Length: 190
Image 1 (spheres, rainbow, N blue to C red):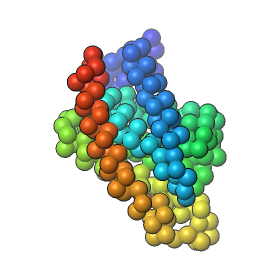
Image 2 (image 1 turned 90 degrees about the horizontal axis):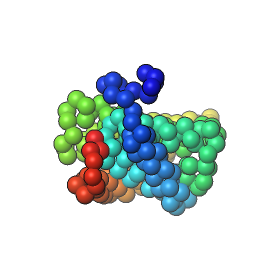
Image 3 (image 1 turned 180 degrees about the horizontal axis):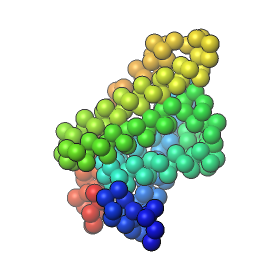
């Protein structure tokens, strides 16, 4: 096995790890298809990202988010409304998709440094979500607003304010569901 198939701590990526990563990427895709159209569609993607990270941990969770984004980038229709391709990532809402990677990296760094306690999980996922909102909103205002037609404040009102409470509920549900599954499923997830 080559060094490219090792996690950062030197542990080799096993078949079971790859299976978890693949299943989590599929879960994120399926949750993206559950959407309500809008300027930024309401989806269950954030739930799936939170759940994946909470259940699989920072390393495997980040790899799952990366696989999901790469699948979409090459044209597999894994994004909201069955879209895919670089156009989706470079479009008005692409910043939020890339922001999922910010959530994952924030979670990975925080849990590696401070442990996997509930408070660490909640804070790291919340900070990651704020980074996702910031990056996505800046990108949305830039792409959609082109020549200043949409201000950052307007983009916040369209793309963040309506999502704060639903995303908080998704975070709580993801942590609860992942906690229950960790206790009931065999094997070590983290």
